[in-house]
Image (cartoon, rainbow, N blue to C red; front, side, top):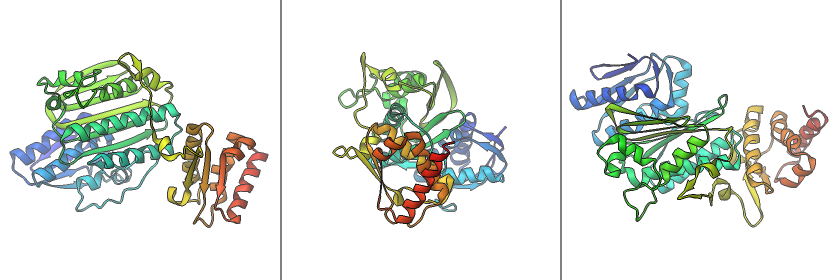
Length: 407
């Protein structure tokens, strides 16, 4: 078995994913509640592969034991350097073993570190950071942007308003470029869906949670959050998994499956994904009360100046490096997204405080954008401001080279 308990040590071997989550939770409960230990060792040293779907929902449970039971967790990191790096980049190591493993996580192309949110401000900051990170690594249509942002807002808002979790909520996103899939995971260690809805049958509670208009308090909530999230995953060829206590519901390709678990998940865990090949998501998915629902405000509306119909980005605050083609790809992706979302809006790029950029960076960003947009649209929609003459010269050379040889 991939999860084996030995006194206060829980060893994970082979592959660890959501299928092993309940066994892990049972082992942690046994060590702390039945055997009376105050310290738990989670040994992933001989783990061959680890998935977000097994790690993210484990974190709020671990943190809840730390707060409520004053338990101490010690993590043994994988020997495999790639898996060890994943623990670090995703921030799993710090959240499980914070006293020994400081938060040194960084933003990677596929894995944004786990983010914790405790209130509305923290929730908003987390969602904005997730959307910003995606904009740097994937091309999103305005429709996809709105579907993603609306869904993650609804899921995280449920944590703030209904979970009563002492440790707030935890969220992580993952981009799978080869499969063209974006996945989000949100988990908390709160009261759970059955208790929140006042339904004793856990399978029925989860089924009711994704139905239109289901809420315990009609005066304050419309009860369409998880319904809309589920619908978006369904029409966007994605997946939806909802777990709370003994209930486990999965939706894939329209097939809804329930599993009655023997080990409870103390709280709520949502795993949600969409395909980047999906179109017209909002109009097809958000039909509530027989009427199509439109998104009134999104991430782009936050960064655009409506009076000038422009977005101004201070590049020194946006990016850490301007010296490589890899850094240029991240900048290109975000600029291209902003231009697409704004339709005809102007993108102002401020080089204030930047002394130099590399030729490869300039080619990857401005050379590619010049070819993509064409000379007239490029000059009308992109404004370079506060740039040194040397930087302007490098950009001009990159554009000239691409214009002569667009391939």
